[in-house]
Image (tube, rainbow, N blue to C red):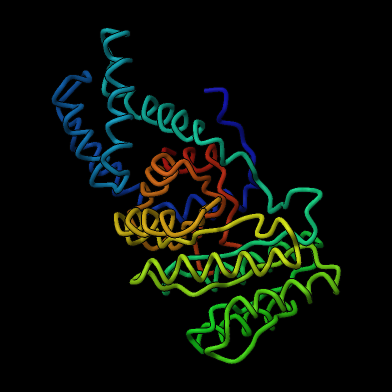
Length: 317
């Protein structure tokens, strides 16, 4: 289809292809079994395909949407060969992702007219939140932007230390206090410092606790309120980081966090070590929140801007 246009450099595309390799081989292994011995797409093939999509962590609701679209095409075209199924799936999934109004970007950019541009990063511990912040800082700095980090996850000394390591590595300033400090106070100081330094981007790390949603909600609301004393429309982006390798658990986390605070974008990490890459399709569709970034490897450059055309192209290559 016409919207499969090459956007990424060959190097970035290679990294994406490699990062999705496990998901792809698992998916197509299941798909070839689903259509084995069949020449046309019939009810049995569709039933098998439904199972393939669900077990590839696309999620039940999104799977049903995809199956419905393929059924429409089968009834319209009367005869669809199983050899065409790959292309049809590719088109329908790209079409579905197009509806979420995201995944058009190919570079790390921030909107004009917002300075400093304030990002608040949320997510449970262990999903790669701090690492994602470090890699984002690195990518923004490469674009020539001045970045300031804020260590507002004050409940774990390790979180503050880890962010400091990234700040040193990327060579960007960090604002921090001691463990147990008030997260809102850290956020306030970070924004004050960023304004003084004429920073372009501020990235605030927050505590990753979900067991008590009410506390989390109150804390994030307070952090936002205090930030607005310095930058009146902050934060401009609330980025939820999810671990793609946890599959359905990532859906659950997305559900919990979107209930606790207003999430405006998503980053899905650790896709290179898993066969659960389908989770990106399901989460993007179900929550109607743009997936902005995906992690497809350990390196700093392996955090990529999510582009739906390149993603689908790599997945169905």
